Length: 381
Image (cartoon, rainbow, N blue to C red):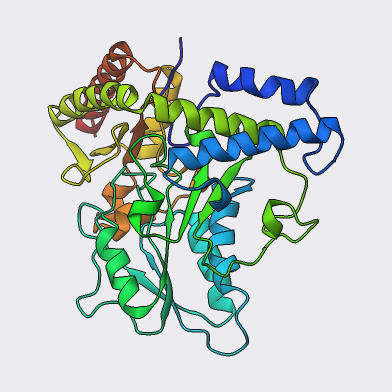
């Protein structure tokens, strides 16, 4: 039986989430903007999901804008808050050097519009290092992800928020990987914009949310018929949104249980990897998500290792799913100062709530066998 160990790329839809979605695909198919009974039932389902998602991250329901996923949420956060500025030099935008490609792509759009982009460095553990002199005085927005999708490193956002307040900048955080795995509190964090995605927490693909402070002057990137308080045009993906709401509700209710289970599995995997000769683990001294471990086996390229494990029925990742197929080393590991040849050997294991100790032991056994096999091959040359 195959073992899935790539939950940071996507998660299976929880059966309870699917159960909540099915009526919206079958009998409760109304448009939330319609005023008849079908529309009113749809609107009630939409409102309930908005409450559920808000509760997961300590926000208010009227701060939730539903989108098509984390990528669109990142686009709306940056382009919706900065993209409407007038012509000429706009000012500075800052983001960490380990952001998701969807965030850096949005930042590149702003660069083409005249914004200056400042990349904030990280240390060898993937932790943000703010400039000693602070942020540029013309900085208007800082974007730092809550937790990294590759290494699992969790950022301390308090210094970022403080630095941004000193120059009057907004703070955005991509919390796609963090929400549902660790406690996320939008109100307490001090950030003004936060991106979420349903399919990272056992919800459906194609739906996400941007959480925003209502004081932010946010403009729609996708204009349309005025849905989502005029911030995201188009008829709402109601089955997906209801699934998102139910997934958020379950994640909040089961968070402690899931964390304890995942941490026990990850620590067992971590110890097993550390005991193998020729292994390098990344960001192990940083606070990390309870389900994530990124490591390299010296002498075995990550793509080779991934395919060998796949043949043995073990699904892992060589980094971000959005950059799969790239021959370049991980930009996250590169930013951490990892040598390119070692970074190319890296793979990521991201555990899920339904994984077991047997899954971890099976992975460790296969890794040990591959180390012996490739070691023998190297000695024959």
